[in-house]
Image 1 (tube, rainbow, N blue to C red):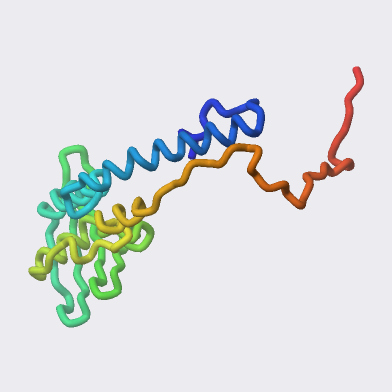
Image 2 (cartoon, one colour; image 1 turned 30 degrees about the vertical axis):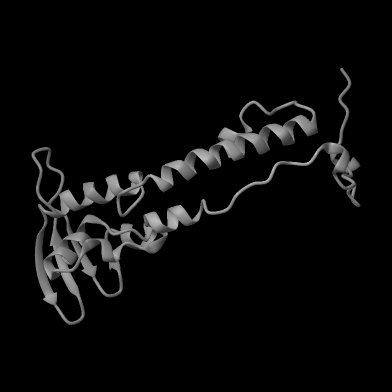
Length: 172
């Protein structure tokens, strides 16, 4: 919305409505084209994140604690700069990891992807459907109709009323 509203300050209300509506339609058409031309399982920004986490997952060390309950311990690779070497616990069936990313983002962390690969499952199967290209495309299946001329707009049955107590006049 910030892109649609940029430059709309201090315009007359009709001009502000026209500007924001036309910019919104333009952005909708732009992202509709992006969505319809997406040929990856996830939209491009999510696909890049997934591939990055999938790459990190390949260097994790996995220990299986309980296959039936889906409990695993993951240790990240120790890096030259001293980072890494962290241990995380993944509860695969509950879709939780002690790093917290899987729960907060509803998108698998590298630890969950490592477990998924270890189990022989498709790592894309644990991605929430809100992140899929199909869902992305569905957001743009609607369309806009042009705004009618201002003369045809209905009069509102309400008025904006200022709170006089919050208005103050300063005299210098």
